[in-house]
Amino acid sequence: MAGILSRCYRIVPASVVDGPRGTATRNYLARERDSRRWFVKVYPPGTDLQGEQEALRLGEFARGSGVPVPAVRRSPAGELIVTAEGTAVSVCEYVDGAHTAEAGLHGRRWAAVGEAVGALHRALARHPAGSPRPVPASEVCDVARARRRLERLLALYGRGTTADGEFAAWARRAAEERFAALPRVATVVGGLPPMLTAQIVHGDLASPNVLLREQEVAGLIDFRPPRHRSAAWELGRIVLDPRTVLAGPGWPAGLAEAVAAYREANSGLPLVDLLAVPRVATGYMACSVYPLSEPVDHPAAVTPELERYGRARHAAVRVLTERLAEAEEVLRDRLA
Image (cartoon, rainbow, N blue to C red):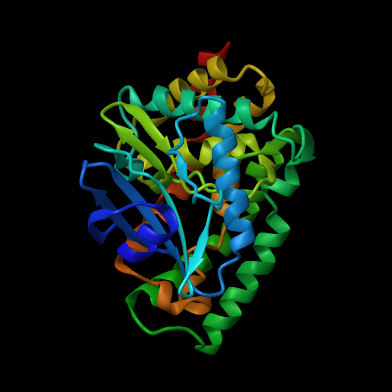
């Protein structure tokens, strides 16, 4: 890796060590002699490198609008991703003193994250891939599709074509509970406005991809290629992360603070979308089969971290559903 960085990026590292684990990539931290550090991502064989380059360009676009996105280090030839010795690599600046939002939101972090996402969406609404447009709410939370996916999953569990283990057994029970709850989920989704606003978004704005330094957002990382998705969905995905919802009972007030800060940073998203954030988050999470499907579809991906996240996500669906009316009332009062 030191040789690739030297030849392809003109970075001469004093050290290269393993970095934080990626979902699909192997990551390294490289330090130069002047103490500058770089985050190095190595893509596995078969990766859609064209899509990864589009994602990096999307991050560059957001950074150009003042959104806190780490700068990509291009090669001397201007390449975002370099392939050398059969290894595909990208490099970006390392964000010092930061950690992910996986510990949950609290205090000033609610407003800081809401403000950062608002600035991001305001910038991406001007992306050349297309302006914001209305889409049916059923495209965001599709109960019929959830039913089909759960039926398939339960059929596979019933045939025993899954990985063994405690998590697989738990995931089967959780899928059965999720299937039985679909009529209630349909009621939740039925309360959404007919249309929601879709625009170019980050695409994977989960807590591991939000870097915090103290109470502020230090960086948004790991964008996906440009695609229109619900802005309310993306906002709800990060501010109502399962670990945040389960951390304590005060999340409805925190949600209201985050959405209010978002509105200050991005007045372009209609109020109806903002008020829909908790219902969209609840409906989407209840309709999702991830990661209950992993023991069937990707047994090798089942790690202790994924197991903990899966259990938290399932528990958060119940909490969100039970307190949805309260959360919506608090949010309406805050935005009035």
